[in-house]
View (cartoon, rainbow, N blue to C red):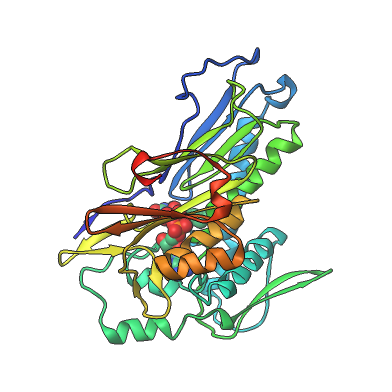
Length: 349
Ligand code: FAD
């Protein structure tokens, strides 16, 4: 068995600094980067006001650690891990931020007909993509059925009142996995932190999600590329100007392992209880927040090309899909996505 991605690779490329245009701002750009949530984060600030910089690095790290401490299932001492370990059905207190991420995830989960399901944890763990070890054998039908019996959005309830927020499960061993939305959540918080300090021109990325505001140091739009879906290639399928939006890509070609000669994707179809096995290889979504974009992309991946197109059109989503074909790949974008495109791979245009 070969694990190809211990650390999730971004399927979006940041082109800042590669656009050939020299930096024209007087103030030097500022940057911070590091590891969080099993992946990498990056913050780039163009023309930062001097007063905004003291302590900024520490504030960014504090914010990321705080988010991780709430929603990580990879550490035992987080609020979410405590909820997952709790074997009762009484409502458990959560933070306002967690209520935000859960309510967004539940809404998108319902819109995708349950394809995006944050109670998928037992199946993610069974197939070896959670904090538990990878399987050395393909899980059998009984194991899959057992895990599936512990999955379902109908078993999770979010309670919000003016006194606080609570999460309640109707199955004592329900396990919530926010991995699919955690990166977008963290990005939106970093964006708010920068804005509070008067920073208005920045790019923030965590794993496969990015958000930009204002112009780059060369007074151009920040440019983000959607990567060609092969293991090695760095070629771009399309380059977009996010115009202040968030973008997120979910793909089946970066995070997988091979078991008995078969590729096992980290994206699980809650209906079959098995990793997806169709020809849609990546779904990219642009939305007003990074959390929203991050929420939709996995659901679209689960649905496959045709149902993802229908959902994108029905919901008016900005979506770019890459599908494997007999002689390469085909791409499709919704009308909303086309308004963000700066350039596109010639063969697809
Ligand atoms: P996305 O497509 O956005 O999400 C795919 C992930 O969502 C899967 O890996 C699975 O966990 C889950 N998923 C699968 N199917 C579905 C479905 N149908 N509906 C909903 N969700 C589904 N990784 C580490 O190796 N070490 C760590 O310490 C670590 N800490 C983390 C802490 C946090 C707070 C978060 C959010 C993630 C952490 N990760 C860690 C996980 C890692 O970075 C994930 O692989 C990543 O979050 C998945 O993001 P993605 O963009 O690759 O995939």
